[in-house]
Amino acid sequence: MRLEAVTVGTELLLGFTVDTNAAEIGRQLAAVGVRVVRRTSVPDDADAIRDAVSSALQRTGAVLITGGLGPTRDDITKLTVAELFHAPLEFDDAVWQAVLARFARIRRPVVESNRTQAMVPRGARVLPNQWGTAPGLWLEGLPGLAIMLPGVPREMRGLLEREVLPRLAERVGGVIVVRSRTVRTTAIAESTLAERLGEIETEIAPVTLAYLPGLMGVDLRVTSWEAEPAEADLRLAVAVDRIRRLAGAHAYGEDDVDLAAEVLDAARERRLRLAVAESCTGGLLGARLTAIPGSSAVFRGGTIAYDNGIKLTELGVAESVLSAHGAVSEATARAMADGVAARFDVELSAAVTGIAGPDGGTAEKPVGMVCFATRVAGVTETATMIIPGDRSEIRGRAAQYALFQLLRRLRPA
Image (cartoon, rainbow, N blue to C red; front, side):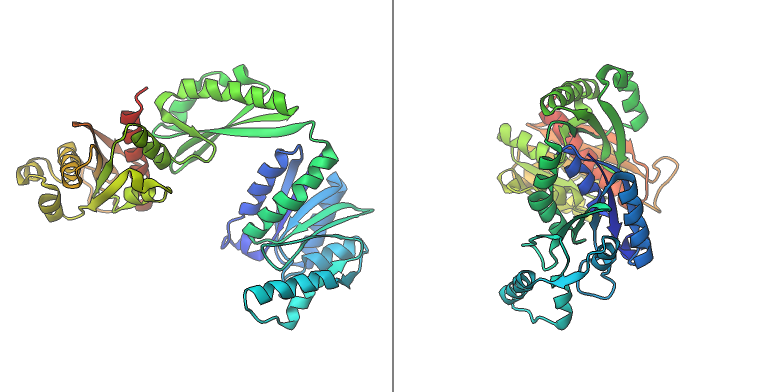
């Protein structure tokens, strides 16, 4: 089955809101064999909505629309689509009672404009929204199929998973699916990774490969198109195994896995406790680790030693090391890792010190130069990277690379 997606909202076009709904729709529908062949974003304008929805229906006969179902004046999606289907809006008392009940639960007053959320196109199936007040709508007629969902991401996802996907899966029979898996890599350039993978696209065909570079690394997404579920899973398993072997230690997980979670799992497996010492990252490394539920079983704490005086007093870095090598050096990173391990009485530690810019660089030590150290069971190793980007990107990539170094030590290839 082919379908188009239309996301409604002037804020999407102005860039104030990132359109996460379109990506979620594409992923979720592909899993049940529905292929999104076009995505369109339009403002809160009746003519723009009418044109996008009408064109989508003419091309595929099916469209999923998000946004514009709320109670305010700019929420005009429902009325516009209803006019296309010649389905006048009618008051639905069951929907209104659900709206009243929700407002009562959250102890908020109901205003007259909320009644518009109980207006339903004639013949439409109401998709109950337990996450908000605007119900989803499933409308079929001569133009085709129009599915309308709220634009609030949490509400959209809930309705998509609970109400829409089961109906679409039943319609397509679930025989043919489009499925994807993602191998996550870090600390390797996209071009270098492509060299390692060589002619893999030919080897894994008909599965396709996409390189998705980002701040934290390059994701490698493999997709099986229009195959039976068992065949798709087998094809993807073979492709993922081949990619992980070629990428080596740079491949740290799949799909939504977090590198920090992998580090914590590896440390837990070896019954090691972890502490960190940070200079240029200013706590980002510790934040990455503590964002993972259950991190307290491994992570003891950290020290943000931004000033050299803190490196001396809190981490025991020798004045002679700072004088001879400077704050941004592998010698200082080593002393920081050793010092934080001693301070927190842990077997595992990491340290980061560098120049995040935009100022402070020299010919010898340019902006983006970051030194790392990892200490595992009494053995400390160091590394230096020149990291590209602005201040925020350098700091974020530095925290990621520190995690990579920890995982490489904990799970050697």
